[in-house]
Amino acid sequence: MGKSSKDKRDAYYRLAKEQGWRARSAFKLLQLDEEFDLFSNVTRVVDLCAAPGSWSQVLSRVLIKGEKFGRSAWQDRDARVRQQMLGVFPEAFTPEQREAIERETSSSSPTSTSASSTSETAAGAATTTTTTNPDVKIVSIDLQPISPLAGITTLRADITHPATVPLLLSALDPSYDASSSAENTQAAQHPVDLVLSDGAPDVTGLHDLDIYVQSQLLFAALNLALCVLRPGGKFVAKIFRGRNVDVLYAQLKIFFEKVIVAKPRSSRASSVEAFIVCLNFRPPAGFRASLEEPLGVGRRLDRMVRERDVASTRTASHGGGITEVEVYDEMVESDKDNGARWIAPFIACGDLSAFDSDASYQLPEDYVSLDPVQPPIAPPYKRALELRAGLSKPSR
Ligand code: SAM
Image (tube, rainbow, N blue to C red; front, side):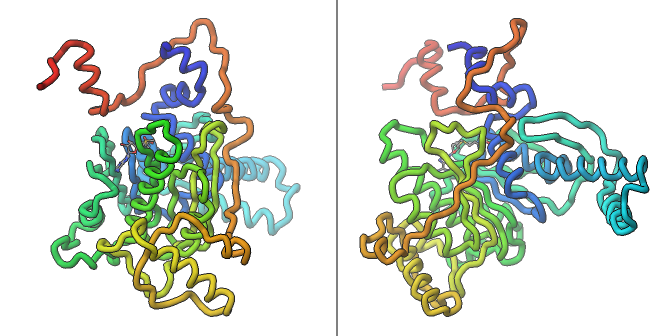
């Protein structure tokens, strides 16, 4: 299959190349932001499973370069229209409305240099205000190398490995002393506002195995998030919606006020992929993230779900004294009967006028297919390609 047939079959693949994104996944994050306003009040972000780096590009363009996409771009555009209307028909507004628009005008003027380019994207308009924020800190991690992105710290590491937590903490806070204590896993000095994880294993096609490996990646991402998030922080991660996924939602609900399942329009409807959007991090009293007992091992999480349910029926505050954490991937029948099962809300996001990721589009006759913006630096299939091309002989 040629590049142009993929362009035709996958509008987001084509758009990503046209708009300079390293992967079509960029649109998923932009559409999630459009729905959940993910980047408001955010300066410190960890992007897990980040290669080739399109989510990091989004972070860089929004948080470092001050570009606005989706919801914030629409808000800006609406404000500009109100300002123009006020200039042309001042009599159409009440004094209170005029005052509100003038306040909006003064608070939305860019702090440095001019508003420059405006371009349309699949996730809404992008406006650029070349404001750079010196407080922004973004750390991106992947098993694969990530080609450098200005202003972003990239780490090559396995998020399921315990050694990655201290590595991340040192990247976030150079004064962090990794040798001090394994329990010292809380980045109390400089906590993070948002943790993203778009992790996906190499899919085997064995459905249950793929879902299992994906869930291990998710727990590894959650563990890292618990170590670095500030209270009120946000966690967004890719999930595969398999059997018992609602148990996972209930487990996440221990740590976050809001847990929502979201399906961006750029994620194929035919795929089991979705994103879990967790808002307002509020760990139970007494909870400490631990390197020794990460989530995903044992039965701690299950116990926490039960403790929380008991506490809520007693209308008590968050259960304190949690000492261990554990994963439990099946809810016992009696719990289901008792109504302990919690169903997360599901939201389809992305503008309905946006491209349908399952549709094929007719391209103009003279359409020229572009090369990918950033081909993988060291893909796992590189050796196989070399062997096939006869560039090297297989070692015995
Ligand atoms: N969000 C990325 C972007 O926008 O470019 C795309 C991520 S891609 C769908 C999934 C990534 O998960 C792959 O780059 C893969 O290397 C990474 N991954 C899978 N298992 C991992 C692990 N254990 N630790 C770190 N990264 C992992």
